[in-house]
Length: 357
Image (tube, rainbow, N blue to C red; front, side, top):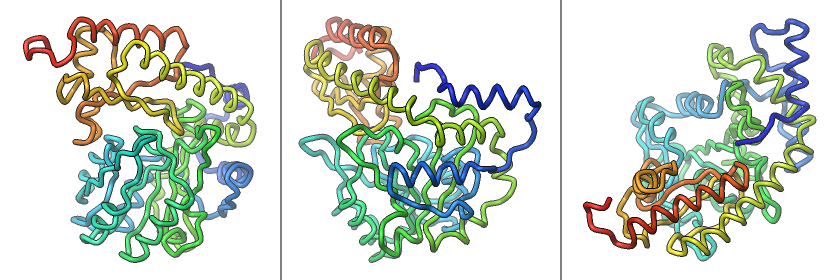
């Protein structure tokens, strides 16, 4: 995000440097800080002593999957999906089972029928991303309860990436999966971090937070993994969860304006692009298929409009014809991005000849 660092975070880091506190990282008070944040904002009271420090959410996911599954096991992932999910699941010898989201009138929705078929086909684990990247979908409590029921029925372990939860927009509510009342939730593990919401991804700190019946698996995360976290990441995250809410509210308000401004500008300048407001996060998942530009319109926008967007093809086959746009920037820069996209559209047109692409 193009935003200054939150003052409580910068103060914590400056103070640490001033006292020469630049050594190795321990979890410190971070688990308690997150537990307090979760209680205040989600009504969830995770046990701080059960959480385990990890460098980032992705490394935590990898370690938990190593612990709860065996090489060759099937791991279900919703598509379109965050590209590192596919790479790392395969890197540790597990099989990715793509489970496409369904199209709904208000944007993508979880396809529970498809999910059950994928679970029933022999899945060992389900890597759930909620809020979802790249679509910004936030699952309701009822949807999560249905997921839990399916996981119980088919003996599937649920691992949840909840990194975008603090960036949930008004009108929607994040429900931590381990907070549900079900055996699947009790056996689940949530990966949480302040990194995305407070713009501190480079400082390296996240937590693996287990349900009551998954504490042994989280405790089994190797010490060398936890030691990959950074002290500044721990201190910054503690400050974010404890004192960073006012700053975050201002950021969410600005992001809310940007996501709505983007919708208005696209409707005016690029009506051929379909866009549903994300319910969380700061990226827009744009459906460009009506332009007739093939699988990778991001390349055309870059070549003809000089605007860089993430290619939807990186997010799995359902991403063909889509692009992902980061709107966490200044309003004038967002307007410039849409302007350049419109230039590309004017230069290439609808259903262009192959030589124009």
